[in-house]
Image (cartoon, rainbow, N blue to C red; front, side, top):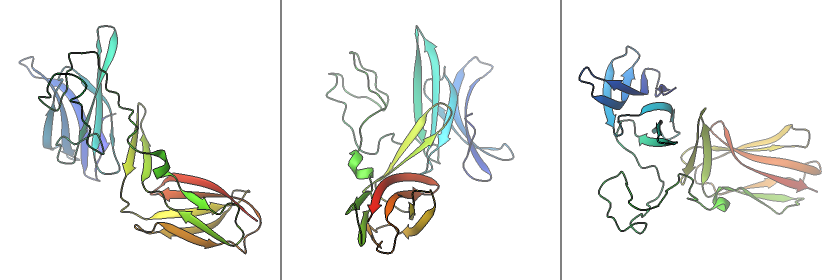
Length: 227
């Protein structure tokens, strides 16, 4: 499940293996379709074995490994770029030096006090990923404001990756559906466009469902009434 396609001829895979010297390794390999190893990245915690992986929208490889330790599972998550170098998990800097008196010596943190750092952090205001429509109800001109940021989720069998795009480099599609589920409107929204103005004076009165599509994923939705 860690075999992930980068392109038609390049793949990433996470592997745990042991040499004849009984030395254990946990690595991510970059391989081609002829099974030639282009690069290997040896990860820490070599006693674990990767169990799942995903390639994110921005081309980053996430792989997770777990092990049974004592009476609980321990999970590790690594984020690598296409050159198999470590990449930041966070979209903005975070400071941890106030959690414990110990100084931070490396990218792997071992605290000597009772501190748990979770992966679920509110890194963004939810209002920034919403689409806003006004006036609502409308009878003439309808204004549709684009979200300040785009939030997109990618799911695997074992975990969900939420990606926040603070800047748009791709087109959005603004779509509108009537109460019967029929698409009545569709318009491309270029990067940099912050608002779309629609003349709905000729639309039939009723409830309409607006949604934004980024790539092949719906990233925002809103209802509006046309009078």
